[in-house]
Image (cartoon, rainbow, N blue to C red; front, side, top):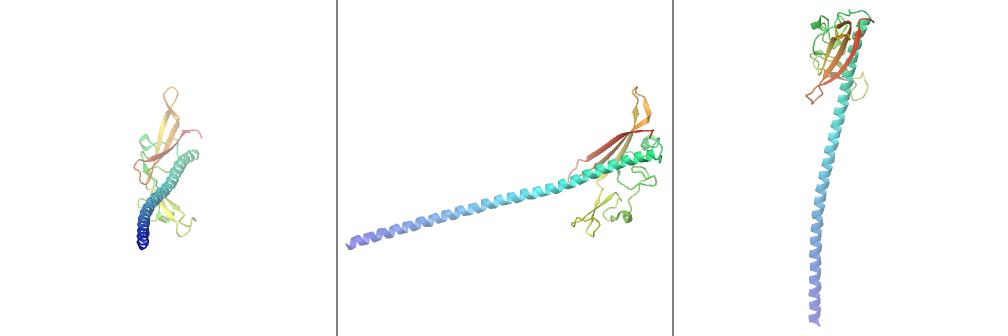
Length: 221
């Protein structure tokens, strides 16, 4: 009788030890899987954060590029309009509406966006640097005296202490004036084609972008 109880006790003890070993091994396996899951979740989180940062950077770059596109468009259209106004008001003669190489007053090739000189026209030989006292743009950030735009700061309100300046040193302009031809191929002295190009390079890019406007200008107003 004692032998049977002893054997049963040994059997029960052995069974309990096996269960403990099984449970212990199962706990180790579960702990291992939990660590892998944590690492996997961390990787996914890092990928998500990097994607979010990339999207944010792209949004900022897109916003700036849209702003520069608008500046180029406005500059080109204003330049063309000023030439037409000078023609309409007889500020300059029709013969003067030509490039310097063609006997006119408009400079050949690309030039920086500077202030107008005594003739009041952009892109001519008397253009001058913008005066920091007039524009408010410090000479320390605008040594070339090119066009400078005042922008609202973090508060979003223009005219407050946190306003910033955008120096258009990456912008250049060219005014090209060409004679037109009659149907028979002879030059038409009463009609010219005026083309204004505004070229600019976006930050981080090497290839310039160009915005172009053109129009036919007649000697007759």
